[in-house]
Length: 436
Image 1: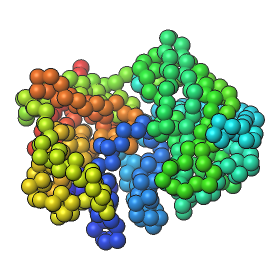
Image 2: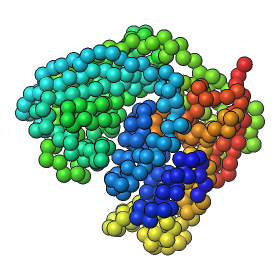
Image 3: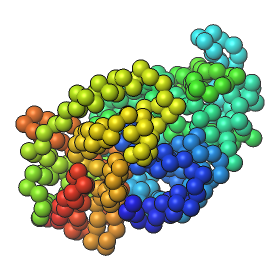
Image 4: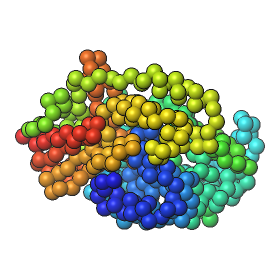
């Protein structure tokens, strides 16, 4: 394994020296960002810790999660793009009092009670394509009959396996300058809780909105009419799903520094692979966006024999399930024959031509894909900011379109930068310079 920075090294050392940690977790660390399609805005320490610790607590228990929290606090945030923006003042705090309402509690679309709820808007970040809003919500003691906040914590951390998630429904965002966001939200987790105070029944909630031209607006009105607490189906929960039915309205003014925020654009000066064409390279206040078109690359087709084998496995029961392997030996035990190793590897590696994490199945890790400034600082993709601008797609004519956001921002970008891309284990280097 190649360690990208001090964070990687400390995580790696922890795994190496703690044999009780399941081997699958090492895979999860490197794969979770590629597989999770939910939209989450994580621009504070507590939000990043919540994202990782919630996954690890489920898998390996309290002690391990607390150790990872320590490592993250000490190491991880130095590379987070949005956190860098916040540290440089790119966040607008809102000073307002609670708005209190007495609203109904519904279970199964039947009104079962009423409750007093206070909500206030705390802060927000607006970029061209994203609007991230933090609310503080407080409930009277009656909430304890329907939602046990104290049971949703482990050693001071939020136990997401028990908590489930929160949803703000029927939300509409209306702005001036013809900017309108109709938030057709399902229960995919774009709203999430970052803090719980069970003594005061108070929670902090972040809601992430996406659109276009957001910072062209000067003002937004925000409305929603339902707060839903949705438990995880896989976890026994005596309370079940509850809906708080009300009518909440808030307003925000986009500050001038956010409306006038302009990116820094870059040109290519050198590239060691002619098949890589950079069509977008810009540093914004919250990240570095890179768009590349790769030519002369054929979209892979999964080996028919592998497809047949996986269909057979789907109809069988294995103790660990289809994804229950972390070593070559475990893979062969599940798939039955070694010939499937290379078939699976070829498919996985070629289907995603740019490897962000440096994780290669059954092989040594590489440094992965990163952006490096002239001071030698490396910035990986903004994996914990899952609302980031990103797109990976195959196009006609044997082309692959790669668009990703990295943690480097305008605040730590330099005049010249280097892009390193892990392309099927081969490191492609692209050198850029700021446009005049």
